[in-house]
Image (cartoon, rainbow, N blue to C red):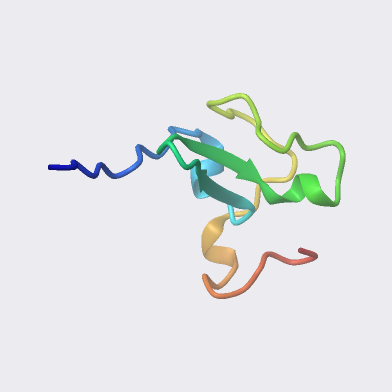
Length: 73
């Protein structure tokens, strides 16, 4: 019998409350915190070292409706 496990969401610090974060789950079940700001702005790493304690690009998740991309995405 196969056991399915939910991926463990990484503790990403400040990213956990950011509208620009997307959690990416690999085929093997590992989860990674992706910064979508990195696609347009080279100052931001695509996969930042965790936990992130300070970020100039942080935008509160509540500021952007869940169905929409963050501004400028």
